Length: 444
Ligand SMILES: Cc1cc2nc3c(=O)[nH]c(=O)nc-3n(C[C@H](O)[C@H](O)[C@H](O)COP(=O)(O)OP(=O)(O)OC[C@H]3O[C@@H](n4cnc5c(N)ncnc54)[C@H](O)[C@@H]3O)c2cc1C
Image (cartoon, rainbow, N blue to C red; front, side, top):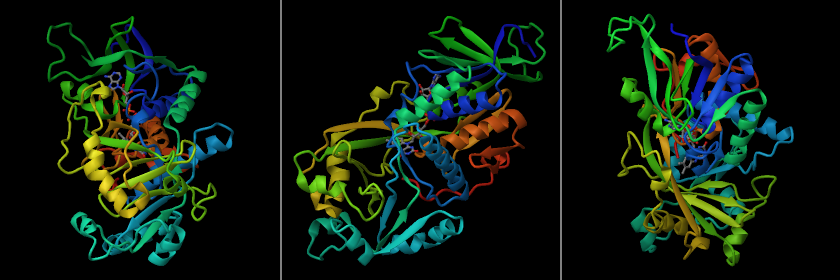
């Protein structure tokens, strides 16, 4: 292998929450290695991590997602317990369901309980008393409910170790830890392409040829003093842009991007909405939990500190997948009409308090789907480690993903990662060579 000009042992591309966690765990467990984190933006966590709803939950149908999220949440809670503010609010997740959804999901809920996930079940009467504002029954004469096919509420499933955090604070935490350990970061630097070279170069134009063994030996950069940097290992954590960097050299990035939107509804000057934010029946914070309604994954999150709600809804069918998204997320815009015609009618149907509400702010980002099973992946390929496929829940699994990337770096795909709390996880389960996961059913 050519080592001439090599400066770094590892380059991590992408300083979103995933790349940050990878960089931190790699540096922590390999302190003697020179590690460089590269991002084309000017700070950490500025792309989809910043546009996220930043909720966390361990209530997933697949065991793998349960473990990835549960151990990550435990880590975040421990960091917070040690005095670092990550903006954590353990509000709980309230999945409100109609009769059909309750019965379809019963087996998943039983499995979660069997796996030790803390869950409380509500029947309709419990729910009506804990959350009186929620409309649980629709009259036959209610033409709007009929048109929207809003079903009567039959009950709810409440996830206890769930809530929200501040993605900016979490990003800054990982950055700080990485820098303190001696890691380096290059901002405003685009990784334009990957350097692929033969292991035994012959100096002939057109190398590598098919008969030569070759590997990735670094990256070509734009915006940095050096036009290329070499490293033994390159980690790709570029989220929805995995395909942009991998596909030109014939490696499948395994992600498809899809737009997701969030809308802010201010409760200022609206007593009914303000009152809805507070509720002493679900959590110690005495605030409304994160509520997912039975229709179209419509959800609301209360932010008592701002006297506002963030609302959205599943934005899936009839929405295009994007293979290589625009690098500039500013071009990915929220649509006021999406709120008006899709989110609002459902919200108002279940909570009268939202009558006439209009968004004061809105933005959009991109989900990075692994369309195979909606579970993240990590795989290796000739000098590369590729991670991604957060599928709309990448922040809540980021810590476990960083530990898995580190385990693969040290022991390869047959290795075992020690997730937070010393939970052992065979990393090949989320690779593509011996993938052994069940499709996730609870994606919102
Ligand atoms: C509206 C919305 C709501 C969401 N809600 C939640 C939620 O409630 N909970 C949750 O856990 N997750 C949620 N998610 C998903 C979560 O935001 C993502 O899973 C997570 O942020 C992905 O992190 P990442 O580091 O993979 O990607 P990103 O944060 O997008 O970071 C990728 C980074 O790579 C950099 N990059 C890309 N290509 C290059 C290159 N060639 N050279 C240099 N740099 C490059 C980018 O500049 C960027 O900084 C939501 C997402 C959206 C859009």
